[in-house]
Structure formats: C-alpha cells, structure tokens
Length: 408
Image 1 (tube, rainbow, N blue to C red):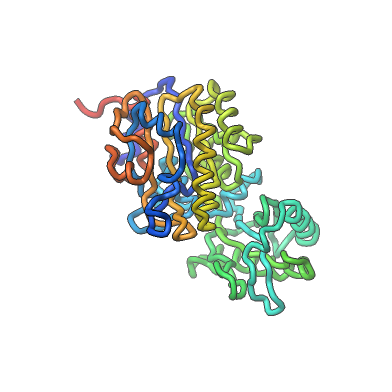
Image 2 (spheres, rainbow, N blue to C red):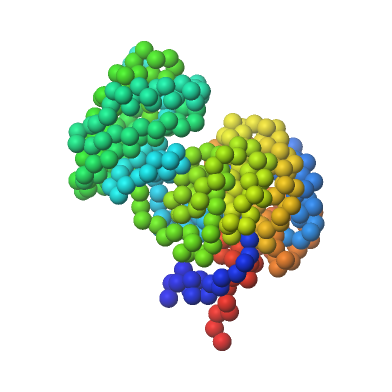
C-alpha cells in the first residue's frame, strides 16, 4: 500500500474549516549586512505574536529536496500536498489557467513576457522596463490580429499583468516540455526552444511551431519601444493530476491576485474567488465565503517581489502589512490555520533559494512550542522540526481530526 492510499483510507469527513495562508517567498537568511536579522524577525507583528502566544507549533519545510531551489509551481504543489517530483507542471500551463484560458487535451502553453532587443537581437532588458498592463494588452491584441496560426496549429494569445502574457498552441501531435526560449539573463540572444527528449516527434513538432511563431511575431513588434521582443518559458502540455476534493475530501477555494497562483489552484480543482486585490480584501472575502468551502488557499505575493529586488525594508513592510490585516481573518478563526511561504526568497540572494521556509500551524491540538514570535529562529526550535512541504496538508488534516486510527 502506498502512502496516498493509506491517507485516503483513513480520511474521515468532518465539518472542520482549514486555511492555508501563503506569504510568497517568506523565508530569508540573517546576514551581517542586515544586522543579523531577517525581514520576518525585524517586522513588527503584534497579531502574529498574539497567535503564537495563543498556542501553535512551528517548524521549517523543504519544498522539494535539500539544496534544491524551487520555482513557484513546485513550491505551491508541495504545499497542496502533491509531490513536486511526481507532478511536474509547466509554468505556461499554470499561467494560462490563471488567465482563464480553457486548455484542451493536447494544448501546449508557454509563459511569455515582453523584452527589449538591440539591433543585433541581443536581450538588453528581460522585462522591457516592466511595461504597464495596458501596453501589454495592446501588443497582445496586435499579435492576435497578425498571427492566428503557425503550421497546422491555432495560436491563442492572452495578456497578463505588466509585461507578462501566455501563448497556447492548439493542434494535433503536440507535446512538451521544451527548453526555454529565454537566456535568463541580459546580454545574450533568444535561444531556440528545443525538445527535452530528442526521441519525441511530438516535442520536435512543437519546437518547430515555436520557431515559426517567433518568425511571424517578432516583425509585428519591430519599431516598438521598449517592448520589441518576447521570451517564452515553461513550454509544456497540461498533465493529468488528481483533484483536491478527491484527494482530501475538502471543498477548496483560492484567493489570489496573480494568474500563476490562480492557475495552480485551478489545476488541482480549487474554485477561484475573483475580485479582491489587497490582503485585507482577500480576508474579507474569506469571511463572506466561509460557509461555502472547507479549505481556503490565500496567497500574498509581495514578500517574494521585494526579496527578489533585494529590498529588505520593503519586504519587512510587506510582512507588517499582512500582520495588520490578519485580525480580519481571525474574526472567523479556522479550525486549522497554517501560515508559511512556498519557498524562501532571501534579500541577499535576490531570488528563490534552497533554504527551508518557516511554517506556523495553529489548531486546538497543536499544543504550544512556548515561543514568543513566528520567525526563522523560532521555527528552528519548533516541535514540527524540518519536514517536506508535501506533508503540510496531511498535518492540517490530522489537526482537523480527519484521520481514523491506523491499525488495531
């Protein structure tokens, strides 16, 4: 018997409410340059402190494996209880779903973003100066008008936020994944997307279609400034994945702002609750929807953004903004509440990292670790220890008394 089968056989249906609150990129490392503190440690968090004082367990989580730096996709799939090594999902698929594109079997999706190219085709700015969403929508409309098909495949283009958009190829005999058409740094040309498997005729065909799309689309952007080019990555097809309600017997809802996280939630069968833009609005919507759902995934992006910019103070302020809104959520405290990140984004690294992220778990049954605050230092001492993120949902279920006893 495998572990998932065991969990399924032990699962009991209860009336419990569970909430997973993700501060994207929450984890950090203390350095001498930052007075040996992390943004979480430096932040004023009276409401988190009160939650800790009321009793909770803390620990650290490994998103994928020791030393592996995760993308947001694997990081969140692990939080949802899916082994990210078993369920590998291309970022293009996630973005497309998040933007409301209804993918069909055999569709290949790519996450794209506008960039700036010099006269030699060298990438000088991977994000085209972070153009406004309105500019992105205008450029995507031009591309949709001029490039409707490549080869025997239909092309679907959908604008996202800022410089981001998605491209979906719909036709017969297509398959991912492909390598990225993105050099991942400035100073290099756009590389060709290539099959990950040299033996796959479907991947080869898809790579040829991507190349043809570039041949047709780049001239459409000629003369634009700064967005006269684009990069594509996460080029993959939609995989089969067990649905959340079947796996956990929980009706799940997602409150997220950015398309990628809504796409991840939709991929596993969560209901997207659209509209709220701030963390306070997300918590208010949680209150309004409290009776409809058993499980809430609430995503807060800004710690990750500021960590990637290396902006310690902005990341600290983002955590304080979250803390100020937390009492709204606690007006209807869920039976089980987990607060964590999908990965660490240390300011010193200016990007995702392999450092385990801190996690706080609160329920009537967690007991107390007798700590004063929720911080990386405190989490190192907590009773949860260091564990793989894919088990967090199972620990939440256990604290919701959703498992029968195993064995006599």
